[in-house]
Image (cartoon, rainbow, N blue to C red; front, side, top):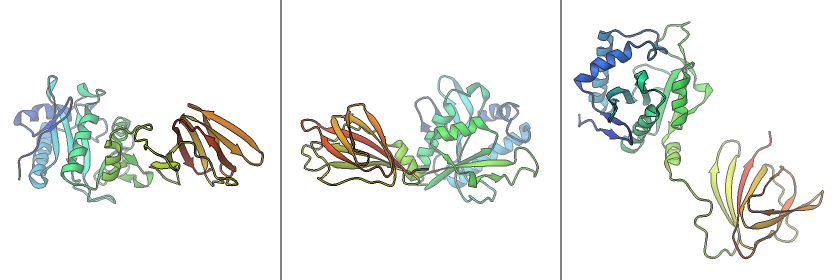
Amino acid sequence: MSEIPTLHGARVLLRPWRESDRAPFARLNADPAARLYFPTLATAEQSNQEADRIAEHFEREGFGLWALEIPGVTEFAGFVGLMRPAYEAHFTPCVEVGWRLLPDYWRCGYASEAAELALAHGFEVLGLDQIVSLTTATNQPSRRVMERIGMQRDPADDFDHPRIAEGHPLRPHVLYRLSRADWRRQAEPAGNLLAGMPATLPEELIEPLFAGQRGFHVERIVSRGQASPPGFWYEQTEHEWVLLVTGSACIEYDAPAGELCLHAGDHVLIPAGRRHRVKWTQTDTDTVWLAVFYQPD
């Protein structure tokens, strides 16, 4: 096996385990608060056996559950990392991102920051197509971390954990997923609606920004004096909410007839089926529209 990498974050360090980590790991596994969503507390022997399995996973896979160090705060706060579940379920084989922290280091953002390091390693270095995370359905703190790092849950994925006895209240589990494509979109730097304006604009510029489910999509539209052709009317099957970011424009409606002039900061909802056209846009500056389209209920 190649050397286990150390992952560096702004405040956290994911590093190989040391022998000295076993004692605080045993305290973690015997802590009633930390084990609230486990069927039982763990003995020191059981904790050491789990540490052995973590080491074996690193040896076998080249990745695993790293020891979490918070420099300047503590040498061992728990673990965060990636693992292959050793049981069969409808979503296996897979790679799971997971964490377990001593209560002293909860509610500080350490789990989320470290989990994001693990996700980046999984997608960028290991080339994984998808990473999952799971927990008992009542574990809201862990579910919030999953959501904070961009993972999504489909209720159809919920399952009963095969290693927890039937009828036990902790057996129902939820599954969250994150694909490499979705992670990359989240990791992209923030865009700017006013950046990248073309030097010349012979016709209106329409740029897709985002597309979701059921036809939901967002566009940036840039006009520089353009208007709808004479006699042309939009008659869309989806609702359109539009915000005028810069410039000025006038929307003309048909049946009932009317006009609505918009200036920077104005927004309007154009219901599906409402015939409309752009009567004019400002000629001496860019008129930038943010248009959000979605299907009627």
